[in-house]
Length: 175
Image 1 (cartoon, rainbow, N blue to C red):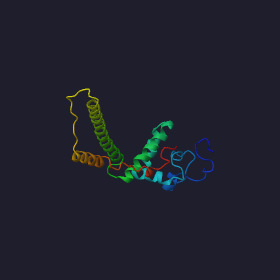
Image 2: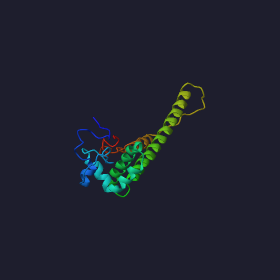
Image 3: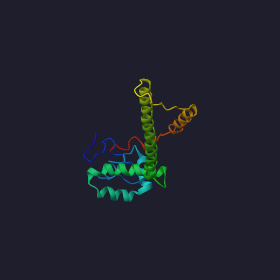
Image 4: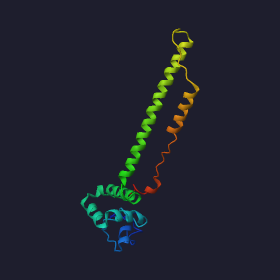
């Protein structure tokens, strides 16, 4: 149950994570308390480490109340990314995902081309067996080219595309 300031009534006496980390008294109108609850101290710790409490306070006070939750979510995401990758932060994650998209698009194009090739070969063999065109010869496929083709499939499609999102925190989007 929440009171008019958005704080939990049972948490009215305990300071928010920000005030707790900064070792100060949490006022009733604390700008941090709706977004950094006491039970999630690491959330504010990372934001404080990357942006600084004073800067976060200024950013939140300059925003309308209805936009603060989104701003805090963005700051938490960026701070967590910066803690994991101090040099690139979110840009490193975005770049990695973009590279995965490029590889997958290439694999998809190869697979689609092979489907078209197989359909054309099947259509050619069907027309040759039905006698529709007696001058048409079916292309022969050597066993060595089949082995090379299957080896190519194995190497292209064996990439591990797992992205670890468990460390992002499940409460990232909750306000």
